[in-house]
Image (cartoon, rainbow, N blue to C red; front, side, top):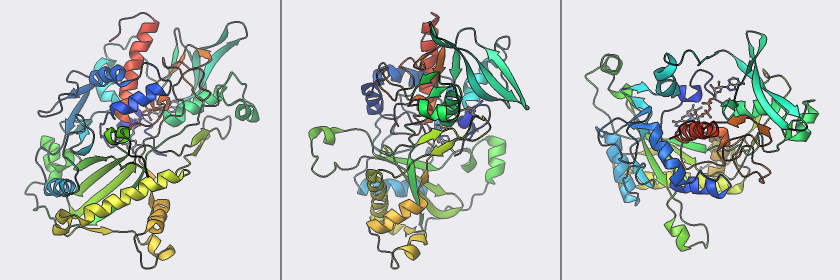
Length: 467
Ligand SMILES: Cc1cc2nc3c(=O)[nH]c(=O)nc-3n(C[C@H](O)[C@H](O)[C@H](O)COP(=O)(O)OP(=O)(O)OC[C@H]3O[C@@H](n4cnc5c(N)ncnc54)[C@H](O)[C@@H]3O)c2cc1C
């Protein structure tokens, strides 16, 4: 699994798309026990994160936050026009997903003047000098466990962490509380090594059990995607400017921004479900990214299923922090997930058959793998697509939920709605592992939102000034 092992974590290596998700996602977080995380609660924190820097960006995005955002398609390309025409034939409207999520939209990016905006640029660098008396950063260090006082009368309380650096173990003590933000794999690994997790699993590795919390490492969700390439007859005239020189000298040109377009699609109701609720539903099932290649006459079609039913898990391999944990994503365990991905292929066929794509000579290039193994003549039937899904689907790198937030009576909740680890005092988790389940979007926007809200929860605990 790809992870950013550097300052800024995965925000330092990701593909830069910024998508909040739909209000419905957060209603469903709240309905599942994350009280205080409904849309009206989280929307101010998204705004607090955001600094939409370009003219014409959605009025719903914040203007004063730390994270600078921009968007593409100010100079529409031939590919954007092609996709827009085809989408309109298919009844897909053009929108800005920040205003209205369903439809075809330019993409908002964590980019400012052609430069990546990661959590270091947005949050760390601006205050690093000012706070150097009390902000200590240790790089190249691996936290191996949380130090916990396990008192039978007063309960368990975290008081620091142990970490490994240059072959030596060190400890750091916390005066108030310990916050873990090690991501969807690192966080459960640290909790398990600290004795917080499923009792049976911890005992089998000889780890002293502090709290029996079966949810630690379970509930792993991700967006699985399929892709295909369209060959087209669209050619961009050779640029008079050298893109590299243009980028280095002016910070603009093709190298300064991803040329992708997003399409959020809602699937028709399943079987007999024609309830008015289902028809009114405003959140998508599928996200497509369509991306031209400035150097070749091709269009990448990338489609992901947004609400997977299959869930995986993360388990320890051993008691050694340097041993990678076992990650079992369990993709496609649920038959419904196959069905959704097959529909992503069927939608691709609709684009292919549209008059706009036909005019552009757009033809899908299928990988040969399933022609040989299953369907010699490659009829595009369900078996053919099942084979392609099985052989070629891959992670969208939107993992979440391995220390999910929920009510204290939910057996699989790991943190409560204040992000406090259940059963251990003075210990919080703040990262994508606390999502109760996936949002209809890429994950980074919600991680920033969770972090901003966590900052206020922490201030409230210690009675400091919040939002
Ligand atoms: C290739 C790729 C492309 C992506 N593209 C997008 C995109 O375009 N848009 C989007 O919204 N999302 C995208 N994502 C997802 C998004 O970037 C992540 O969901 C998000 O950054 C996760 O944030 P996090 O704080 O939970 O974890 P991370 O950002 O992974 O941070 C965890 C940090 O903890 C550190 N750590 C882990 N274990 C330990 C330990 N034991 N001791 C010390 N440190 C530890 C890690 O090194 C890392 O620095 C992408 C992800 C990947 C991998």
